[in-house]
Image: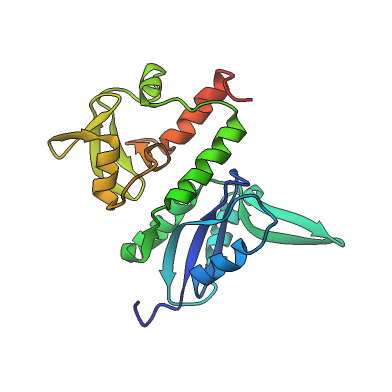
Length: 227
């Protein structure tokens, strides 16, 4: 690690409260995760979604201030004995929080300091289990998204951490990337180097600001498919 790096601003997800993410600072993020996950107050463990390496402690406060300025209602707050306490939890998607850090990194020319973390098989399993229980229905696949006009053949798409690496949707299973036809999963894994990828959670359409997972959820709510 760079000798100037003292810690990280992190983004944590937890399937136990899917509408919120935690943004904080840690000198040692993995020690922080162990501390959080040693507690039994929530059904599922926190998982590290992304982190941004910084050379000053507690720089997460600046990110908190930016979000509060944009929309103060996103911050989780409570009142104890007449005193308001602001939490490090925000009612926003991990993807949106990541975009904020990506913009900060780009402004400072430090894109390499921002790391999107590959989820483990257990973390993906926990998220799928929580999503299935929460939505009480099977989540539709890509052919349904195409049938509903959420995404169309010929649309350009990208992964949130690789906005310049654009692919074109060929059909419900494949994209064309750099002149080669490949599956959505192959495209995602080729860019990230990961063994598997939750393509709906990480993919956006060019010109759009929502992931395919969010667009799918909104359409399902519109059609009354979610309880």
